[in-house]
Every structure is written in structure tokens, then in C-alpha cells.
Amino acid sequence: MEALALIIGAVAIVVFIVRAIWKSRQPSNPAGAPESSVVFKIGQDHVVRRARRNSDDRPGNSVLEKHSRWIEDRWTRALAAKESGAEAVEFPAWYFDDATDRQMDRLARMGIGLKRGNLFKGQASDLIGLEEAASDEQFAMLKFFGMPTRDTNETLAKAAITRLMADEQNRTRWEKRMASKEQRDCITFFGADVPKGITHIAAQALIDELSEANPGREGEWSNLADILDAFSDCDFREMVEITKPSRDVIQEAMDELLAEGRTLRALDAEAVAERIIGKHPNLHRVYDD
Image 1 (cartoon, rainbow, N blue to C red):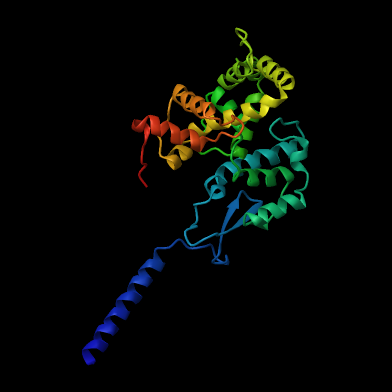
Image 2 (cartoon, rainbow, N blue to C red):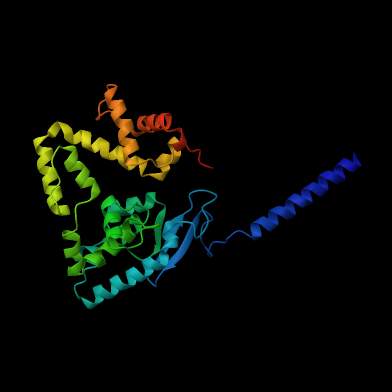
């Protein structure tokens, strides 16, 4: 019994020491901050508190904290523009309106609050957009101008595009860009010829005209576009365990399913992936965890 008590005592001491070492290595919160939140300053006017969402949510892990320096620089420019009274493309007049109750409610749901300072509507929009994905159009614009898109979000993309569009030459380039591959595919889908040298704007006008003349096929094209987009999505390919197939292989699988009685409106990407793997086992891929 004495030996057992000594063993238990020794184990307890080891556990105590290990826990003490572990705690000493954890990031500490600023003085006065609740253990469930992370507090940091943005410039001289704002102190932001972000609630931690789980035990792995450590300081520096959130999108907001990663981009806090970018936000600080942006808000510094905004305040300078407001004080100068000069018109700034980057900060329109509405930017300096008071944040709405709806915006503050959204920030609260995101776990973000202010310990000091008040927010403008534009500042609240900046914070909310940091955790929103950039739109497809924003990605397209950034790629067109050779801008980085990795780790971007709605706020970063919107700010970059605003600066790009402030240049008249960039606006002209964007307006006169050539039709995208998707637009060309869409025109062909409706049975029309793609005019040589057609611009993006002209192609969209033609697509709108074709859609209006063929209302029953618009939904079919939308579903087809979703299927093609799915195979460009690495997360989807990982889910269905397939290597990215060529457009011809995708079309071949869809044609077979349609010939068997499926309708294009009801066809889904998972069924197409299953057919592709059945016909082309070499495209089956089990992704590592």
C-alpha cells in the first residue's frame, strides 16, 4: 500500500509540473481582458475585442487579427480623407455615416466588439467583409489585372478593385475585355455562332437576348455551368475522389447520362463524376488526409 501511495503521489507531481509548463507556454491576453476574448489596438482610436470561438482559437489565428495592420493603414487613410474634406474615390461619403444597428448586430454575432471608439458604416463593412469570400466577379477582375488572389476576401478584393477602377485606362481595359470562355460556351449552348472578336459586354448582351428567346433553356445552362465549375473546385474533386478531368471527358459522361434519359436540368456533378470514374479508372484518386 505504501508503494502504491508513493507511485500515485509521484504521478500527481508529474501531472502538476506538465500542466504548469503547458500553461506557461500559452499566449496570454492583455491585462483586464476576459480569458474568452482577444483584445488588440487598431491605431489610436479603436480597441477591438474578438471573442474566441473554441479552445484552438489563439491570438493571431483570426482573419481580423492577421489583417489588423492593413485595417489600421486603411482607417488612417480614411480619417485623413475625412479631415481634409477632399473627395476620395476609396472612401465615398457614405463610408463616414454611423454604423447601422444591423451591422453592429452582425459584428456581435461574429464575436467582434469595441472596447474604445465608434465605428463608421464603412469601417463596420470592412470588418464584416474580412470574413466573407470574394465574389466570382471580384476574383475575375483581380486575375484580369494580374493581382494576387490568394487568401483574399471581400474587403481586400473590394479595396483593390476600387483603386484599380480609379484609373481610367484600367476602366477602359475592363470594359473592352474579350468575352470569357464561359460566355462563349453559353452562346454555343443556345445554338448561336460566337462572333469573332466579341467583347465581354457584347457577349453578355447576346446571352441576355438568347435567354429571353429560349426561357426553357436558361435553367439548363445554369445547371451545366454549375457542373463545369464543380470540376474546377479542388474541394469537390477531393470529395468525389477524382483527378481534374478534361472538358471533353466531362462532356462525354454528360452525353451518356442524357442518352439514358437524364435531363440536363436534373443532372448533377456527383453523377457525372461517378460516370467518369467508371469509364476512366485512371482518373480515380484517393486524396491523402
